[in-house]
Amino acid sequence: MKKIEKLTAEQEALLPVVRKRWTDRYFSAAPIDKSAFKKGADFVYSLCGYEPPRIHYVESPYAMQIKANELLGNTKEENSLIQCQPSTYGNYSDYAWVAFYDFFSTCVTIEPDLLSKFIKYKEWLESNFFDTIQYDTDIIVCPLPKMKVVNNRLHSITGPAVEFPDGFKQCYINNRFVPFELFEKFRKGNITKKEFIELDNADYKGAAYEIMGHAKILELHDAIEINNTMITHKNGEVEEVRLYETKTIDKEIGEKIKFVKFICPSTGTTYIECCNPGVKTALDAMVSRSVFSEITPGNYGMSFRN
Figure 1 (cartoon, rainbow, N blue to C red):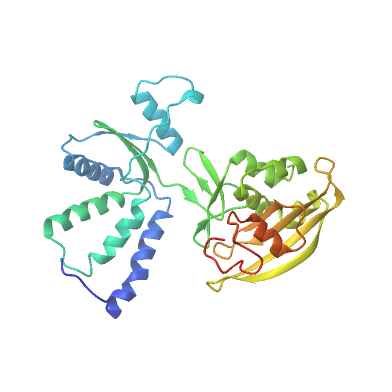
Figure 2: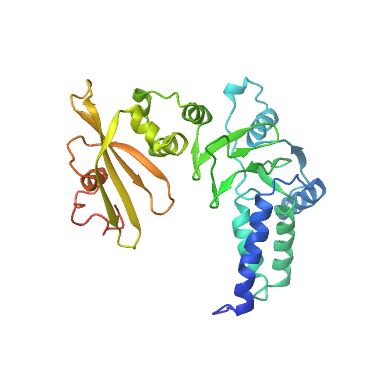
């Protein structure tokens, strides 16, 4: 393979074309082309010296687990399923690297046998499947789900962002997974102040903000804004930070509860977290969150570690 130092204008123009072709396929929710899937599975198994596998078509990752347990002889109740590892290759993660080499196969000369194998693998992925569990004699496969995407991230504040044909669904806020039961609690607005404070996952609290809105969250705690600031990071990203405080003293801690609200400049995700009740400013609140003792109000934003 001859190394290339720079893409031509034509090659650069092809980049978004290839990217769109693969992202469109990934988000298409198209049904599996069973003929193409079998052809590809037989080829992959032959590379490993195995006979063509028996193929089990199911409709979600959860159904894959049930089928895998059945093949392994585990006939216990559903809540006793053994966690079966999906395959390393032959799943949704292949869309990234296959798209990468699909583009570069147009730019360089690849050894014919290697190129032929890659094309066969690519054609397998083009049969529109999402994931597989592979055993020596059997392969379990499920189709692509319907996905709700905003700014190239799985995101929906009104319902599941991912839904498979059999009804298995998952909720995501800005690409962060949120358990369905918790999502529904946020959506219906029936989470209590105590339940919110006890959430130990910042992404879940961020999801609550996205779904319920910051006004509802702060209303839940009877909190008002007492300080705000704009922080410019070393890489030029600007972060808006606001400090809130409850109007009344919390009986459990004997002080007013304080919250810091900030928007991740990289993802756009909004977070509201409890912070040290002794802080006076929004900047102090952010510094207090850092695990690095050398971070101070004077250098916050200048270190890649904050």
